[in-house]
Image 1 (tube, protein in one colour):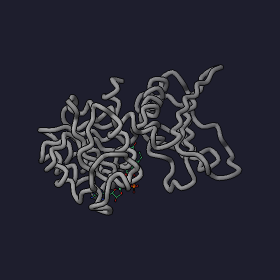
Image 2 (image 1 turned 90 degrees about the vertical axis):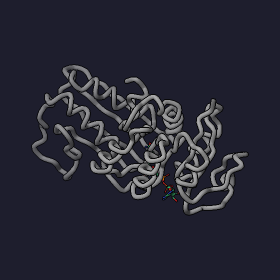
Image 3 (image 1 turned 90 degrees about the horizontal axis):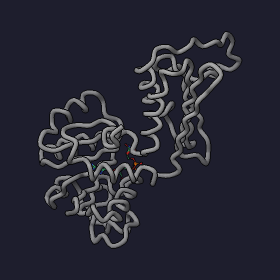
Length: 263
Ligand code: NAD
């Protein structure tokens, strides 16, 4: 039996990739695509999917009427918080990549998802999820640790959310980080920003790059570098597809892809 998928934000950069990935997977069926900016247009023309036979719908409720099992949401937080509460009300599972929710949103989603399940994952790239987990596992064995994240030259925030989360997780498992030896910084910021636990974060913005991160850990006579690279949006799709298939097995609200990978 195939799982019936509705994609919210279908005409967006991520949404279009999700439509393609879902349509290409024999265990999933793309049955609805929603994007208020492109209502009525042929989904194939907008997303590059071939042979979906779908037109773009105006709202998530239109999608629910078609009997979707799972909605995948890559939109904006303002739109997504309504979609998710509607999905919970309708008993539809949600796989969510949209970023920008606050603690109050997460608490509301936790209360709302009782008859269906919701995964919110700030990073669907499995290599990035593993990189964060590996950094967390390694952190207690090292005295010094710094994070270098490298992104394309259109990124307006720094450091990246993934870098912040990595530092938070490293700091949560170890508070034994050595003091910074720097007494004089020739250029302010040369030693990066001071993150959780005093872990330094360095943000590189570089034309030609997409999304990359190195976690560098050092101890006496040795160092460990954990590096992750996302080369394009396709890097997120295996995680999204996996989540669509497993969301029914993870009751309530789940934050982050880790439990879906059993790590
Ligand atoms: P985008 O601007 O290309 O696409 C967003 C789409 O959502 C647009 O087509 C817009 O018309 C649509 N939209 C807006 N309101 C809507 C509504 N009420 N109903 C349905 N559709 C609506 O953005 P993007 O680059 O595709 O990113 C989308 C989100 O995904 C962002 O929040 C981004 O931070 C996040 N993101 C997450 C991951 C991850 O791995 N979790 C990866 C990349 C991007």
